[in-house]
Length: 386
Ligand SMILES: [Zn+2]
Image (cartoon, rainbow, N blue to C red; front, side, top):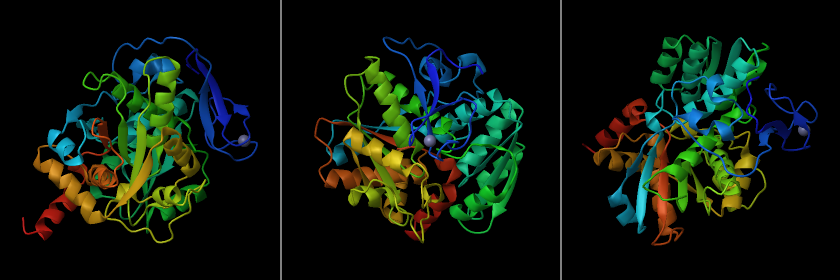
């Protein structure tokens, strides 16, 4: 495999044994989740653009990356929101401008690279939609077959684009756990791209931290990052990424990380509020925001550790509040998805709780372009007679 000099393999987060980088899935010894580890110190130099810019802190060499130029997304200042939140500055990291219009492109790009490097012919995953679209596009780029298992409620745009990119798709009646069960029952020897069961998904998400640390507007790390959370690859990736940057003396401090989930499906928020070590599955998840409807995140423990270690926390928001958050920022010109609206609503909730200081610089992550969620945004306005 075209691994970087620094990459030392995959370590089990439960039993601590180290495994071959070609492994996909859980620890063969104990069934725990694997995590990429590195053996490097001192200064690192970044050059180029996109994910490849950060290759010295990633598992695979720049020339090996399956690339549709994910990453390099803009950071957009939102002064009116900063005033409302009572903070020094607020920005939206607009992940909707990625290759397939979603944050998941970062992790999927790295996971498909790993599949390609491991000699896989087929990749597969259960997905609420955006991950499947990203997987179909990146697998197509790599010349691999992709198989997505999506719940029936997945938006039409995701289903259509999975097919348009040449991906195979199984639509499963029900919600994400039903799609996940169908994925687990498929019985094929396909390379898994499932979040956390494939350790490269959250590894690719680290690049979000690197870009924030390099953003000229920020002059170092922000004070807080508010991230809509489903599986939690964003929170875990941000935490790992800022830990790397501190180790290599690129930033003095890491931001507080805040996870936001809809009230109808908030297993991470619930665990934070109970000060629990692990998440408990939500029995009857129900939110208008499909990408955030993951009732039992596989990497729940890792997400909770990341939030706790950063000194951050979590907030749950109503469907109406997240739709209002998205349409408020859209009214100011941003192509904000309903999913990103959760970050706006969450930041408002956190500000009310006194989570921010007046001199804080706060970044809200918009994981998905509003162009993929236009129907629920429009119907929210229509309900108000607009
Ligand atoms: Zn293990």
